Length: 286
Length: 329
Image 1 (tube, chains in turn orange, yellow):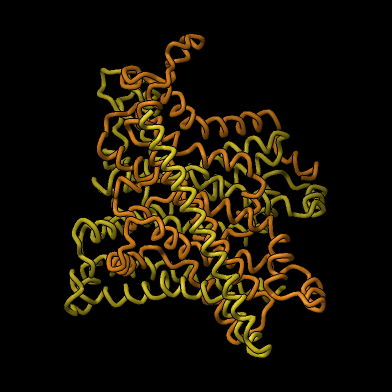
Image 2 (spheres, each protein chain N blue to C red):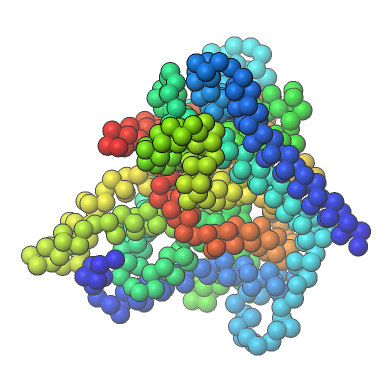
């Protein structure tokens, strides 16, 4: 950022406002984090900010909520389910999209442009349009409540965006690269795996973060295709049903919520750069 | 220890599932490519592209194209998809009072979520741009984007928590109200506040997204232009309104359309916190109810089609923009 633009507003109020906004934005999450370490009784009776009356009294914090929700609460199981769902639901669409993106960018075939426009057009079809027919087919094929079923569903929903992003990236790689590779006798598969893929790592990384967060945080697709089955339920379903059924078991809810957020937050914090990159290139996904 | 071995078992089967699932897909391409290798040269050239895009087309046809067409068809059939009922489901959708509430609320979501997320995102982008700790501030605003709607609902359930007047409040908002002598409000139950309370969560989640994109746009404004305006005696406000806003108006439009789509599709927050009760219904939640609670597939389909129709204008804008980009390349 250029230095001049920095000073178009006066400075002391500016700092106060900026810091205040950041503070207000973070406060709700901090409240939940603190609550998750407080005993049941305290959570029910007093606000989380009361811990600051005795900031160095560490006996007011404990891990019971986490232990209880991970074991008896089944959150540990749900966490593994979420991983089992999200990892393939991230890798499969990227694989399929990368091959297709290469073909759209560097192979000749009839209908190339039309097909690509159709794929991009599918970007904004709301999930809701697909749920009833798919659920019927799933029930007939016995795919409901299976991991394979939800992997493929996430793949289907994620593909238009993935193809759009990767096609633009792979298509913008230098043409000479592929031409000389083919002159050297490289097949398309070789050019794809040895050239296109390694060079597209930044795009693939941001896509992977997106798709991972999207599938990890998804509620609707899991509700529909996993049919509320406890055995395969991911953290989001678990958390939603905890809110609807337990209602008042607040202290467990706080710990469960944090367990569900831990991985996305780690991914976010460690890979923020790629994440921002992805948002900037792919802001079209609805 | 019993639970531990259950976990080990589950981790192993998870790894196996991941390996088979992902490896299977990759192997599919390699095997097909290998098989194509046996064809004569000319045929290879013709067939190979379809090996690369074939799986994509099959998956999209199965998961998006066929279901979309089928849903349109189902919307003209009755609850159990047996008899043709003409436009009855659509007439229901536009005349039913519960649907009216849903339409009203989606409009509220659309207007408030879009204007507040984009507005706040812009303001924060401009302000943060001028401080040295910009990255840190932006991370804080941005962080909710990594959190699920369901998780955010839990966070805000605590902010909105309500206790009767004479009991200590455990929710932040009501504690603040009572500390200045105002009666606590049941934010999610009160019919005047509940929709705004739900939308506020959406704003909290989406502002970071708007901020990041708008911030990048602001940074791309050439220094000379700002400098020239300053030399001509423009003040901060004038630079903001007369130069920054017009120069990033395309980006603002892009961000706004994205938020509009997410407002139209609002579901998770409502589903988890109020399930559409007490006047908070939205279209997507209504569709879910028709589908799962009332098992009326005709009505559910009609509602989905209405949602699609609302999104199509935005889709057209998106595709247009894409083609413009292509033309420039």
